[in-house]
Image (cartoon, rainbow over all chains, first blue to last red; front, side, top):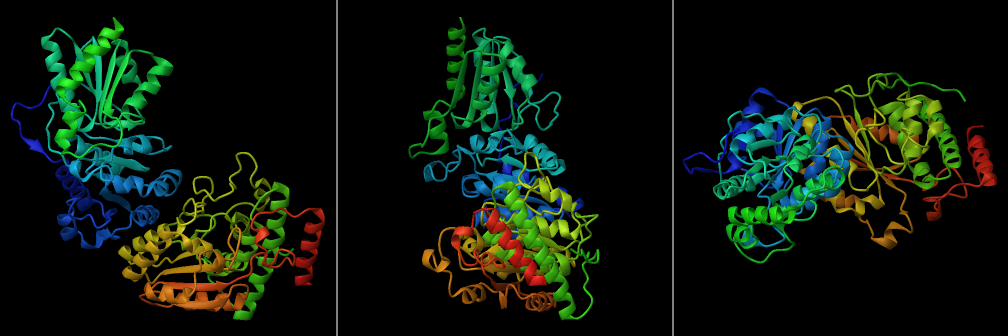
Length: 318
Length: 290
């Protein structure tokens, strides 16, 4: 398996990969439409609107209607990509996500923009750290948290081909392109990006690169940390989790709430099938004022914080 | 009971009076059948079912262009039951139209029945979207109509809402957007029985002036007697004419219509007739067709 990030430190906004891919799909598939809540700019869909003016549906600032309209478009045979800031798309329209999309098995693709703490200083109303816990609790809702531009493109393509509702959680925080020796994306499958036998670090989204940095630091101390990118939180890759548990210790890390998200999903599996010492890294709750990068540092969602948690969990195992 | 099946494509022939007579017979059958379902199941929403019966009968036995043997055909007219709790009326209309066997009505609310308390499209083809929580079907109906607008498709979209349901904010998000888009093939019917679960709408959170509200949102407004089949047919016929605005038919209705002791009684929103009440209800409905 390949490891680490590319030697250059170029950083990418995954929204660019998202809109580029949706535009590419729209060229050959006229079922592809975009639905927004006045979020043409923040979703970077201005070019899509220029190219396909008839297929950009802006419902205005009305998230419940936006998701309902998305389900209706799917009924009419469209493949709607419904985009808005994650904090509003999920929380404001939660019953529409449940009833109109998941329970109705409507073929709607929900793209949460500026997830996690991307809107740092704007405060907890604009943070979307609960969304993974909320969405993965809904039966039939596929939840994907891509880690970089390549995986974003793959997730969008897979979602378009998948029959059923999918939530794709995108950030606006720049991330490096990850190195993959044999890149392959499949909904419901995680990937091992760095091999190790002492402890497994399971991450997704913006945290994967940091997990790889932590693994590199641990390696210099003689600790072998396996880094797993678990892009799909629901349905989760249980085979890969069983392998991870076989290392004897697990650390999870996500740009989200500690309760109920990726860490919760891993803990549920381990508690029932493979109990091992765990550390769950994430945010504890409503967060103080601060930039996204400050919040990540302050709450230990850094390479150093991840490495420290790995050492702790290894001590606990011993 | 003579069962007259509508034409498979829903196109209607005959005079308004002939068509209204046919719908009236089917509506009477629906009322008797749905009361039996509620009695057998021991629960249901008879007040709202009976309020909506004539509207649903007019749609399913005259207006809607659909093929019961191919309920997902892309060119079908769509009907969305936004007031999803009134499944007694919806299921009898769907079965009567041939979307599933009438005998299956006996399974209403039984374990693993396709006839859930609220309609579910993954159980029952012909249901367009799962409703039940109020304020959901209308936005989905708007999305369906937008899809047709993008494709310049011929199909029409009909949405039935309760009047109390119009207290949900999502309804007005949908109304505003449908008006903005000029969705000319979208028709909403408001079942205006003036009662919600526990009280009168106007005593709870008043809706009037309701017509003015819809007009202000960019809609054509028509008022009808929601139990007069000829009036309903004329309103639906007019709704089929080319237009560039969505249309709302505010149907003046009576909760519990057709059963004297249920009419205009909020207490029959829920409620199950006892054997004597059921016998009286059937006698009244049979007398109506005598």
